[in-house]
Length: 210
Image (cartoon, rainbow, N blue to C red; front, side, top):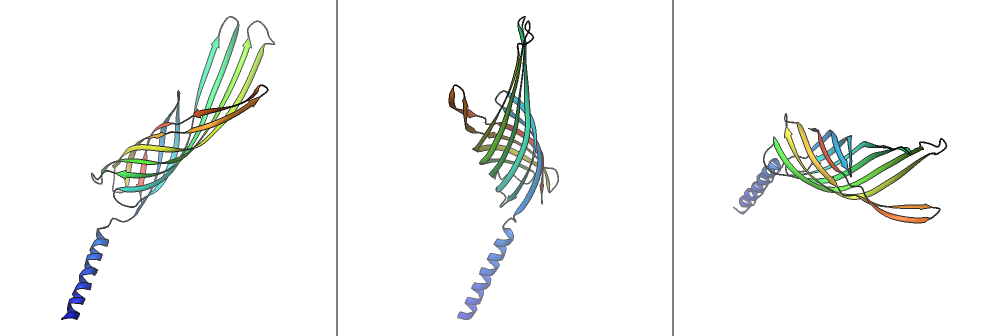
């Protein structure tokens, strides 16, 4: 009788564990590509990128993504004395690792929020040209390039909508809060400036669950 009770207990535990294992959602990997509109200070740019990730449950996933994009602005001014032309070009590349939390609303429509860490780089090139209207020799031109790099927190909110069982359309807003200290030196001395170059990104793409 005692052996029968032990056997039934072990059998019951095995059945319970098997049922639990079947109920647990499998780990799912996903890949994706996206386009993003980036807003950096007064600049607007367009970039492209991709992501890879893994959903460890129905509610939690980890993702890594990288994107690159550029933006430029032209400034022109003229008067009876001179004309000036300035072009500022930005090249951005954020690489982001994040953890995402999905609301349990179903398989088709999945709103989510995420937090993470980004390595954000920014290259800024400023080309400036000046021409004196009356003096042919009064022309000057300068070019300066600054490189910014920072590890920065990332906050995002998004929505994934299933097209088929394995393909989703994703729309996401990201905010990257980046800051770098830029050191400059010239004939007059040296200086350090805190420069904020965080971006607000709106991305749209396709995610494929493998």
